[in-house]
Length: 329
Image (cartoon, rainbow, N blue to C red; front, side, top):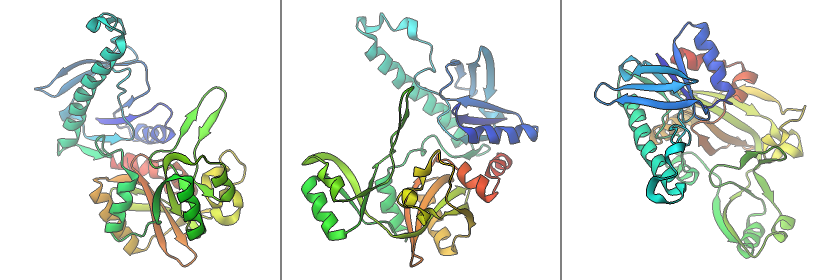
């Protein structure tokens, strides 16, 4: 049996599942945002679990699992337990404390389940529930230790320091320190991009602001989006410099009819070797990597997302990554 831990709105999981179905392989997909998933029972000695999905009971043994794709968190801590009716009288106070306590209990149990799946040598794991989040600042430091170049970076929290840095470095950009904002409501959509810093931008800021990452802008020839799958790299070059709208961040053409030119790309062996070292240090066997190539053909590493999207690399370059993942599973 194959287990897919994902989310309902993840199209890549759907495509991998379609390939598995075409290959006549048995699999169960657990979506973290599915409100109809609830825990039923667990036999710790025999490593057997029972889960209710859409009022249907699924029983499986860890020993029967052959492969797991940790695409996303497969079980939500918010809805895994249907304990709403039992919270009102717990601790004789508002339910917020009880909810927090039960979520902590849920975390312990889920971590044990993931531990069983990832520790068994007979189970083939793509991704991990324990290493699916990285600290981007630490990753930059590790990338340097692997021989990769990274942009010169600063953490700035005052208008005065930022103005001095811009005067010194001439070209600066800023982006999220960790994960960017990605939030949509019925009325608005919020999405954070990499932004250029200029004098007008600085003038609009207060004297003191939240500590933010600022990097020296690298004049790029093109961007690279690279998907890593178990030691193999599938790269795509994006010629985002063709327009001002996408020169700083190629994602800014979201929803537009125009797309920058995107072509398959062959990475130099030295870069692949350095990336392999970095992935090993991060204990990752899959992830989406962002790099840029300068006009002097220098390679700069930007970041790696363990659960990043890869459809944008798969389809334009005809890599059929969804099929490769299904075959690996």
